[in-house]
Length: 106
Image 1 (cartoon, rainbow, N blue to C red):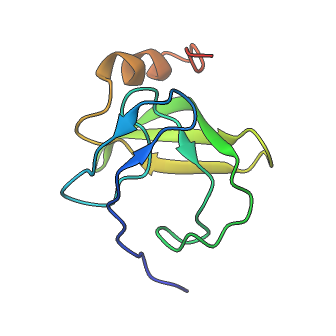
Image 2 (cartoon, helix red, strand yellow):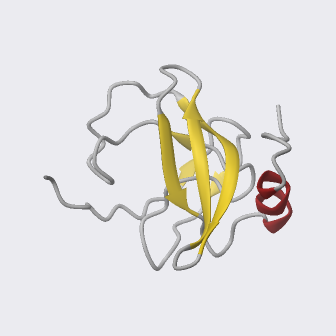
């Protein structure tokens, strides 16, 4: 099994168009403003997935060890994906998604 590849890169979010800065303490995986991600990895950081669809947050669950965990669904291929929330994520969106209201933007 492949190992995690650290890639802490800034990018422009394809969903909301905002500039997303590097995270600084681990790899940046998603936009902290709208919580969307891009389906680019097979193994975290490898950039080997050809799908390139937008991963939209569908739900947030609370993990006793990891804290908020965002559940994504790719709008292109339908694959589900999970990722730990980042320290600078929009807390209002995270809380709304824990209530099962669905993705609130777009």
